[in-house]
Length: 522
Image 1 (cartoon, helix red, strand yellow):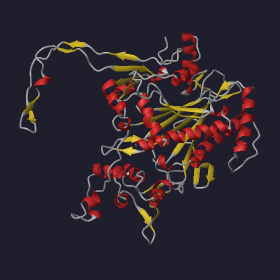
Image 2: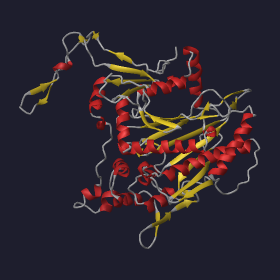
Image 3: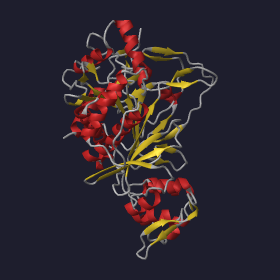
Image 4: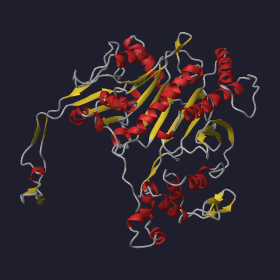
């Protein structure tokens, strides 16, 4: 049977391990040492590490095993001991704010700042570039990794170039890490990485400007996506390095460019006349074009899919590992994927879309259980009970709901703090399964839900979040609902062999994380 926690009874399926086992001791030698002394002078040793006989665990801590609602996501394991502590105090679910960091200030009485920076080993420069909260220190680091042009008042006005398109940069990773630090003054960020053209020749093919919001749409022709994709970037004069700084208009602008581009690409593909050039569509024009595209798609046998994603956050370790994303400045990426891709020899195969994995679940669930997956999933969410069956604690997984969307904690989380946004609205009697089927009101609800999720993560201290869309293919009716997943990377849970196997380890019950999230809404 399909491995999912969703059931037609309205109750999530939750497994419980009560560990009890015996381990045969086959060690051939002891290596006993004194480890040190306790405060009262008592010696502590490692004798417990070398048992004389076999080991028996008669009553280990209970472990909850919860299959993900979507089987391709794997399974989540919750340690009851860890989770009990957070159930008693959900405020434990957060990331501590880093303390201020400035090597130059710490060593100010020993040497001149320029001399300190110049003679630092490279790994320490990387660490400072990522973690320093001292703008002056970051500016010194920048001067020591690239050549810049300065005005009479000392403000940077541009980079030195070896040739067109190649700036004179001594250490590119250090350069990028400095420029991605929010504490670097904005003027320096602009000159180093934000000014249009400074990172390459990608064409700007769209723009959204309203109030303090300014967003560029770049065409990424050199994309890993073979048909190219688009990136909606906050502009050089609307700098957003933290999701807590994002406004409702910002998210509207980023998403408007996404909705608009998908409709323009489809209109071009299907020969729909477009009376627009070098300006953004209004909301009314966008909705009118959406209706036209839907009408044409209903008569067509092609079923492309949208692709939308957002990597927020940047980090770089002193050992030289890039930990997340390519740029701290807020941007989102998107494309329209074809239905098929030609085979190398002859014929074709389906082109990949992550939303297709949900189609497989819907179909298998119907075959195995004779029931509608999303109807049952929503019922399980609304009728949820806690794994520990503690009736005194909150049981709801829901963080936010309006008539169009539901923001909730999935019963089986990946990356621990995962949130999901599901569209619960219908259109023409069918679930809304992609942005093409979403009218103006539904799109606004989606945008607000995305913004709320990111603001919650910001308040909890998450600095790196991957967000993805699971869309239904356009022009198909199969009961699939549009779904977004928000996947933070936590300092203590970056991913290892367990996650590579789709086995996700969690230190809290999902209900208690929902409590922690709801508290951030206030």
